[in-house]
Image (cartoon, rainbow, N blue to C red; front, side, top):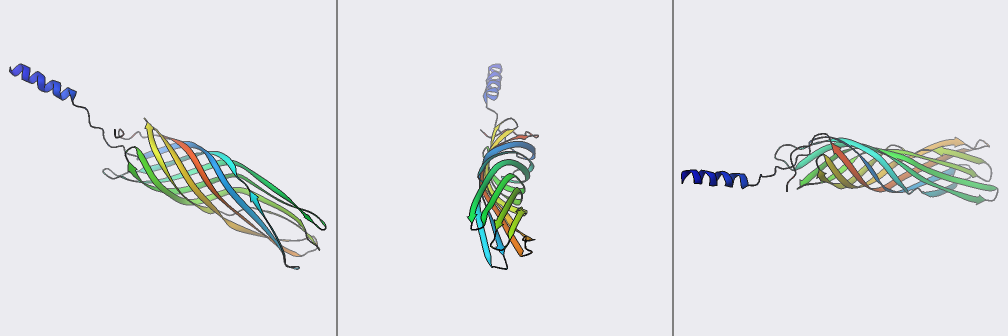
Length: 232
């Protein structure tokens, strides 16, 4: 009887399922992403002698693809995750406009080749998902070129947007082992840059260039620290 009871207790213990431990997000990671950017640029040229202002907008929408890497920290027993992430993306936004003036054609053109960010992240875990917000600085790889034949002079400009800022939100899921997937929205705003020059007749000219973009992306990350098993 005692031997049978012992076997019954042992069998019950073996049949008890193991309790999954909460997943911990702490560790370094690298990954890749791809998405779409709705990017809008503008150029405005002012000729002070005549008070003439000419401005045009650029549609620089583009698909993009890039790389990211970062670090997360989650204290034991907490569902708050802190992190820092850097990324760089390559885009292919192009637009040009030819404007017919009384003394010739004017040309406005813009290109959006790449952009990068350095951001902080803070999020809340919910099972295998991490919901987060992110913000930081943004670098633009963009250039605008303008040629305008004013009534008394001709002016040519080439300018770039300034270093700017980025704000976004997203969700990241644990897939399996060391892999995660994320979906993210970002808004990037690059500060305006003003360029001063002289026209062909020596007249003072100034050009102002702006750029901002809304982006959505899908990304995959490989974590170097697998952490604890995910919840069921």
